[in-house]
Image (cartoon, rainbow, N blue to C red; front, side, top):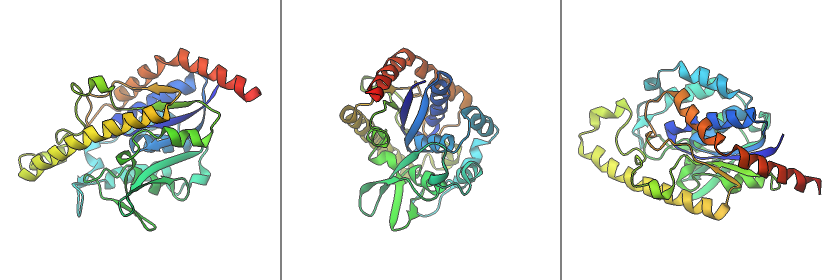
Length: 284
């Protein structure tokens, strides 16, 4: 059995792929010693770190009406994630980071200081709310003196953070963005109001203007992610084939998890080689 740490990237509805990756790694005998997560990756990672089996998570989420996860927003947001937050509360409740079975850290961005924030203490539920607060889509989360939004703004796949948790262990990163050569043909991040709640405003000028903004943000997020992956160099990079899924799409969660499982299985031999090298280093 080899020890690893995970860096789980953001991607909204694509994030169910993380559960397939985790399920495959555990089934293959890898022991996850730490998880760093951004956005959807933070949500999946935190719930798993709280002691839930990926299959149990999928069982629960599969029974939900995804239309009920969001309502119309108030203030600086198009959507109200109240339904999603209730689901998260069911999993995480009063759990604190110190209670987690696996160490887990989350990323967010403070709008006031314009800097990345690492969340590793206090309420896990509040931390997940912060890391999933997509700018403009969901309202920012007020936490202490911070005004927090989605960690993807500055750190789409937190490889460096995962490595800092256990510097001697291999980092397995999961990116929900396609390779750069496939950006042109991939579905841009929220290039349309995928959620039915947005359809009534789809023809309004403000909706079209917001679409332009989201297309531009999509390019920035892809580029930011690739630059940080090139700089921080995970030991293994897994890319589930989820580029056809929009961030707010209604999806079959098991099918998306299966895409994560398929991608992880393509790297099993490589993972085992790195695991063996890691064990040899730890004995020295």
